[in-house]
Amino acid sequence: MEWINETWVREFVFLGFSALASLQRLLFVVFLLVYLFTLGTNTIIMSTIVLDRALHTPMYFFLSVLSCFETCYTFVIVPKMLVDLLAQKKTISFLGCAIQMFTFLFLGCSHSFLLAAMGYDRYVAICNPLRYTVLMGHGVCLGLVAAACACGFTVAQIITSLVFHLPFHSSNQLHHFFCDISPVLKLASHQSCLTELVIFMLGVLVLVIPLLLILVSYVRIISAILKIPSSVGRYKAFSTCASHLIVVTVHYGCASFIYLRPKSNYSSSQDTLISVSYTILTPLFNPMIYSLRNKEFKSALQRTMSKTWFPLN
Image 1 (spheres, rainbow, N blue to C red):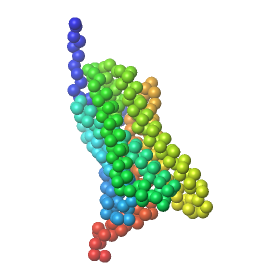
Image 2: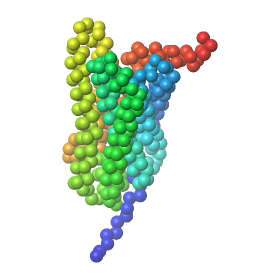
Image 3: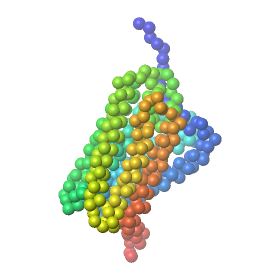
Image 4: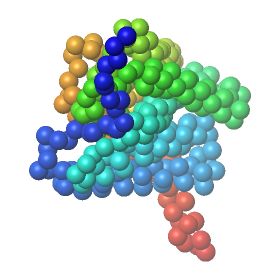
């Protein structure tokens, strides 16, 4: 038996922004400011929800968990990306790449299932308002978040194991700025059709099934809203769902483009651009979408700031 003299890949080199070498310092400043602003807004949202008792409702509980997921999600990717923008050697170890992929998949998949839970919350609030406190009790909310995390953990564990059990002993140049599925799979020396099929089916499970549940919820929500006699009542009911709908559209739109398209349509430059949007820009806009359009939250924020800065008043 003849052995092939091949070296296993021990680290990966990120090439995501290599075409923009002259702009990397500018990108560092822009992304750093956006990242700090994102951390600040999400921290304000979580703190306000915790400190103000008027926001201790299922909708704001889910919003605080969503903000926590997005804060952790950006923490997994953005700090390393910022360091690499200033570094000459933009590398990550094989184990570090696997950990990064698992963590962002866990948070991203949990985020997807959490949006479905938030859709169910809006359905119960509008279609069954008299039973809302019973159907969406604290135990139910905790159970939905735990189920979302369990599903996210399982999917992330399976995908990461499948990807990093493939042989890597050819190129280690990753045409991306973090360890995403498609760029890493492209570097595998031997790719299994079964592995790719399983990963694709799990992507369908994570994206399509929660989206279908959200669509079913909103079909019933719209049906209930149309039965409200006053236009003011219809507007008020729909306004409580508008923020969730915007976030759902952005999340599933970006994720579906990245993970549910045919492999033949893969483009590293397109993926880098879309990935910047959902790893940096989306976590920035989501808190603003939920908070700036919400009078109840803005009132709670004012009360919290008054108690914190002027406790004697």
